Length: 376
Image (tube, rainbow, N blue to C red; front, side, top):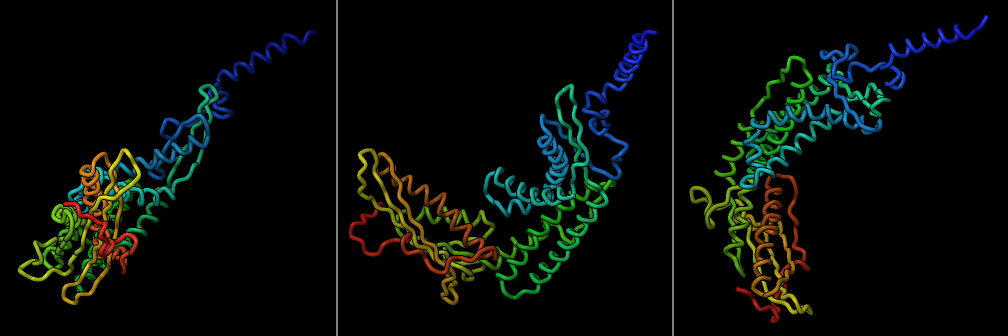
């Protein structure tokens, strides 16, 4: 008896089996899972938040899956950002929209990085026919909710303590610093709250102890009424430099008084005063003329004449003519140095960084140098 018909029949059966399970064969050994299309009975939406990634290698697919989950949270945080507009304006007053966007992005990144700690790659699948790897990133909603609730509760306690200390403080700087810190923490808290709305199937968050615009308005009003600054610049091109420095301080959310008089005729709390000098220098360069500039500034408490801090800076700029080199140096002073100095003063007032206690001699203006021909 020949075995050929039996073998032929057996092969036919195997081909039928393979044709019926073709997805499993082309899927690298298992059938195409439902999550590849975005849904799966193994990961019900009430329990899991999922993201699917695909790429030509397994690691890249996993990265894409993480990114898919992150986009869900970033979109919700951005949608809630209108409630923080008062903070963003104070943070970047007078600056371009893209700078406010950078501030928002930094807040979003902090909250999103934290929430992604709860995301895991739970499954992978390879489509042999297409040559694509798929990855499933999933977050267990109850676990993520518990983590977010803990962070929000901690921030609520911190915000309430900072606001209480601010409203009880007799020291003006202490009041400002506590209010500023409370507003910052409240913005971060609201970013976590936006994440919580995504994690909860109900889409509900937790009511905050304060509104962001409530605290930023309180801070603005106190600064305008109680912590005015005066700016005094002498030397070369003093007027445009003083104007640039004043504008920089205003962008930082500070109140700059006219002249040396604060609100209601009171003396300013702090005076930012300094000297700027520009002069041509000889450099062996047949193409360009050069101008050197220097600055010495100090921040003073008028009542006690105590020098809170001092900043000195200098540089050299070149161009085709002395006039153009001078204009270039002036732009650097107005745009870069004035902005940096304003941020340093604001950081001191807000308690975020200390001003240098002494100027750096090499960067300051040399004294009584007969070779310095001032430029007017």
